[in-house]
Amino acid sequence: MVFDINKSIEILQRTPLILESLLQGISKEWVENNEGENTWSAYDIVGHLIHGEKTDWIPRAKVILSKAENKTFDPFDRFAQMNKDQERTIEELLKEFKEIRSKNIEELKSFQINETKLSKKGIHPELGEVNLKELLSTWVVHDLGHISQISRVMAKQFKSEVGPWSAYLGILKK
Amino acid sequence: MVFDINKSIEILQRTPLILESLLQGISKEWVENNEGENTWSAYDIVGHLIHGEKTDWIPRAKVILSKAENKTFDPFDRFAQMNKDQERTIEELLKEFKEIRSKNIEELKSFQINETKLSKKGIHPELGEVNLKELLSTWVVHDLGHISQISRVMAKQFKSEVGPWSAYLGILKK
Image (cartoon, rainbow over all chains, first blue to last red; front, side, top):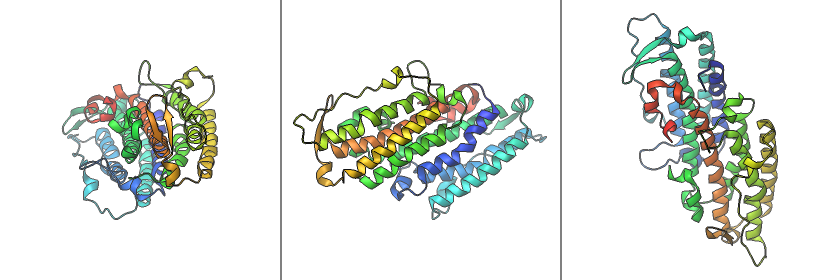
């Protein structure tokens, strides 16, 4: 597939619903268990997605589309959610994510994306020159990657319960 | 986590909703594209999940719980969906899956699972002796594994669009 703004928004706008359908109202262990030391739980991943909405995607798109001389992005803290108040319920996190994502999609639409804008550039602090199309594609892939990760983390909770079938369950080896 | 029937049903009953939130009403390419030759699209995976509902999980649980002398399961055809009518829409498949899953969960509940029943055994044609707890755990892990796979297949559609960010997107390398 080549990048398409409408097909990107199709994914971005359903991610809150996908996360709710995976996590809302489910037993704590499914939400809070991880894959082992220094790995993330579903709870951590939702916190990470919220942090991205606040500091990554739209703020960086604005830098790219701005008239600023220096278009270097602020570095993104991939572990910010670990230093946050961990007392909030997953339902509170899901609600916050849904609200901020909805606002961000409205903002994205207000940019009236076209081919010229998609080719505009910014400077990633580590990766160097990137353009708006790449940033928006990455936003979509990042969502889907973390949905995939959440399902994997949840699958692994029954790793020791499946007996001989573990041979057929590739997800338990990832 | 140790196996728990209620926590298993929590997952099994939300899978139709998760699939709907991922796939219902979305552009065809997200549903029909795959990861390359001899790989599955989201459409294929939903077909595979339907086939599992019909011939795998509940039928095998019934063999285990039956008084039959020969408790060898029929082999499961992992590619059955490829030989089926491929003209149905994803919405039709999602509806069929939702209905059959709902019926199967009712049937699962009617078994009144307890520790004794969980330890009852059947014979897998390739893996040999397995018990009901392992079968039901595998059902849950199988759901989550395929949800993870669908998200990955979808993520890969923008593989060539993310530019330098591909270095950070582990999902594109799986």
